[in-house]
Structures are given as C-alpha cells and as structure tokens.
Length: 253
Length: 253
DNA sequence: CAGTGGTCTAGACCACATG
DNA sequence: ATGTGGTCTAGACCACTGG
Image (cartoon, rainbow over all chains, first blue to last red):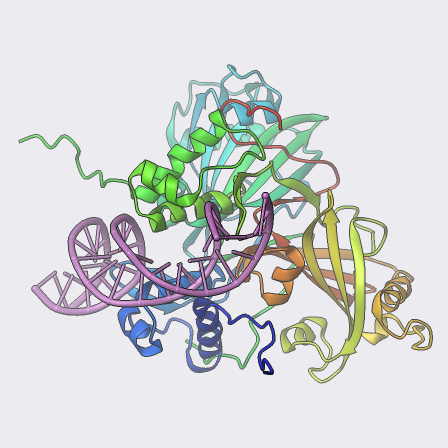
C-alpha cells in the first residue's frame, strides 16, 4: 500500500487558522475594521472558541489585531517605529516623547543595584516616565540614578511628583554622556506597567535596558517596557526600516 | 458598611500561579532541573491543566522555563546576550557566530523589494544563514542582496550551496559599509525558521531587520529571527547589560 | 441591559522521546 | 509501552463596555 502523504504531519488547526486569517486581513479588511465576535468566527470555521482564540492570540502578538474586552476585535494599524538609543549623545529628558511622572529616593531591586554598582542597601533616585507616541502610551520606564550622578540636587524645591522628576533629570543632564548601551529582550507586563500601557497583566512587552555611561561610570540605568504588539524599536542614527506585511495593500481607514 | 477590599478585583489564577512559580524557581530550583509534569503540577495547585499551562507559557516566554514535548519542563539558564549591530563598520560574514547555508537568485517578497528599492520583479541574491551561540541555534536569517551590490560575482565557481553563499558574502564585503540601521519587533516563527531554531511553529521570535547602507544606497537587507525565549539582544559598542531575575541566586548547575 | 473578550474547567486524543 | 508536552473540545461563568 502506498502512503500518499508520507510523514507529513497535519498542521495544527490554530496555525492553519492563523494563516487563513492573515490572508483575509491582507485582502479583505481595512485598518480599524471590526471583526465578527469570537463565537461567530469559531462557528464559521468549525472550531472551538479556544482554538480560534489561539489563532487570534498569535495575530495580536504579531501586531495584526487589537482586542479589547467588552468592545471587540479590530484590525490593528501597522506598528509604529519608535527610536531607541539613537542620537548617541543624548540624555534622557531632552524633549522626545517621554513624560516624567514622579521620582522617589529608595533602595532599588538587588538586580538594579548590582548593575549600577551601588551597594544593595544604597538608595537611588527612581524616576518614573511614560512614553507617548501619536497620543497612545507605548512605553513605561523606570530610570535609576545614583545620588552621585546628581550631586547638586536640592531636596528643597520640588519635593515630589512630576516637578521633582523634572528636577532630577535636569541635574542629570549636566553630566557628560559618554555612551549608552542597550539590550532588548522579551518580557511580560507586570501589574503597574500593564495599567500604564493600557493592557492586561502578562501582555508581551519588549524590555529595553539602557546603561548610560559617563566618565567610565554608570551614571544611570533605565529599564523601559514597550508594548510588543504596537511597537517596532529602531536603532541607529536615522529613520525607519519599513517592512510591512505582504499582500495587497489594505484600503485606507 | 465599609468595603474592606475596595474595587480590588481578584488576580487571575494563572497570573497568581506564575508569581508563585517564579518565586519557587528563584529559591528552590537550579538551572536544568526538571519540574514535575503538568498533570501533577495542576493537581498540586488545584487548577485545571489548561490554567497551569497558561502560567507555564508565561514563564517560558520570559525565558525562565524550557519545555520539550516528550521530555518535560526544565529550568532554563539565563538568556544569552547576542550582539546585534555592534562594530558599526562590519559587513555580515566577518567571522562571528554566523554560518552561511546556501544562496539563491530569486525574486524576493514585495515588502523586501520595496525596502531595497528594487523593482518587484527583479531577482536578488538571498543568502540563508544560521547563527549559533554556545552550540545552540539562536537565529535564522535571510540576507537579501541586489546583484548591483556584487557586480563581480561570477556564477561559474560555487553554483549553489554554502560555497555559493560564501562567495556572495565575499563579494559583498568589497563594498564600503557606511552604516547599518536596525529595527526590532516581535513576531512568530514560521515553519522554516521554527525548524531551524528547534522550536514549534508560532514560537515567539525577535525579528531584527537590518539595512546595510553603502554610498547612500541600500546595499543589502537582512531579516533575522532570534529565539525570544533564549536571547537578549545587545546593541551598542561594548559588552553586556546584565539584569538577572531578582531573588536569591539559584544554586549552580 | 445585551454583547464582547477573558478566565476556567474536565476531559479526550495526538505527537514525540525514551527505555 | 510508557510518560511527556501539544492540541482540541464543549461548556460555564466573569469583567468590562456601551447604548
């Protein structure tokens, strides 16, 4: 007996579904359009809702869909390119999309203390910032600054809040920035970050760790979490590297 | 009546489970150790297996666990830092962990053609490469090179295969590299990449798109997919930015 | 209120690795 | 043959959004 389909294992349903939906998105839907609800879609494709959801999850991860509880599933716009680590000699706070929220002087997590080279019991300034692009929050950041990097900071003016954060950044900017080193890895949004990014806890994020070096010392350490579904991080001196999804261009919104 | 738990919605079980397991990993397990199987774990925590799996998925996404079908779930080693876009003036192929596999001259996907600025019907050289670190595959790459970038390439020697790929890279290296621009985004591994990375289709990957510029022209375009679970991408001129998980250090392997 | 996506369950079967 | 993780189902209930 000849085996017609030698050793070809059937694709998982959710993966095949992802492919079908991708093609449908490329050809039959426009940005912002609302998809049928999950129960209808599952019925239409003859699968359980859990399976359909597995496919939708993939597409959301790839930035093709956006799902909001109580509202529905919509076709996502192309990812926005956000510049990271460009303009080598720029301190944080020079007017880009970053918005300082507040600042506290407290003992950081051990991992941060180790990376900074400060003692595990030494307090550092921690500035919370939020990055906004096109009116949408794209990143939440904790910027850790050893007191030694901002020696002239007076506790008198701006004791707390956003004003305090701005004061810390202002002082920091007086240092000579030698270089910055970036690292990117995948993570999941913790409760705080999730709220700030308008996502659920556990949402995939790109964690960018930046080491700001000045005078062969680590003057500051930034840990920023970017929404992985909506962001494309760009490095290097200039503009965007545009790669869109294949297929016919979708109609305008 | 005072509401004791004002508006605090109970955490999802899988998220709480993730937290508990994270702490357990930090304190009670060492790298490489095998966890109990999913059915036992689910029973132990009093949840359905699907819920337990949701927590494990998170941890695998965060690089804390490694799961292999037919084998089991093990504690993953810390992510390896892989340098991307360092040494600005380096062409691909200068002996780093990259290994050329083969090369074909074919019409690329429209998105690639557009990014290169070549016509959608013009064939380009496409070199497949694989990046290995510590003996493990970490990335799969397609490097697209317009024929104009390698004018002296003769089809005579090395008509195909790895030798051909090396020949193309050798010719490419004769150009003056002006700069490279990188972009990072989250994606999911397609069938080919998945096989090359020893993962299942749909596994999360960090897609690094690099534009190699020479003489104000785009001389080559690289699309590389890195295993998101095991890799931390580092940018910039020097070494690693080390941030490990918090908590007590786990015992050695 | 009705409708959406998010969580959770209990069970079944499959693909794969290993002894 | 056994045990592992991977896929899939059918159904229930919850949390949130909006009219």
